[in-house]
Length: 87
Image (cartoon, rainbow, N blue to C red; front, side, top):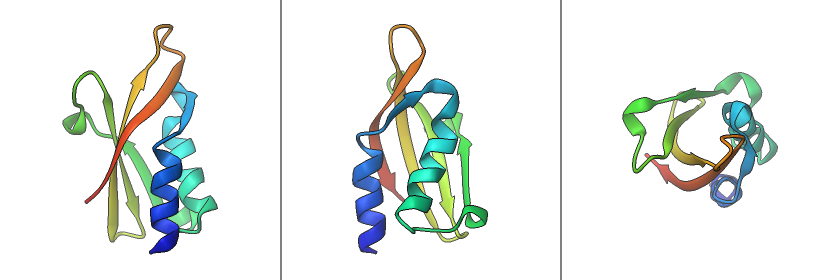
């Protein structure tokens, strides 16, 4: 559980190229040993979009789910996470 809390805190300050958001979320979850590479699925979820932020859903080992909201910068190159919620 502590690993998940630490991973969420790391996700909250994540910035990366816009095309790498899903992979970066999965890498952070794996790095913090929240799940293994085969047990983490991150998908773009338009239903989670809010206030011009794009929503992503991370499913971890089929049980835990996180919603991550990220905005794109002015040049649409860098994505910055603005919120992470555990569902």
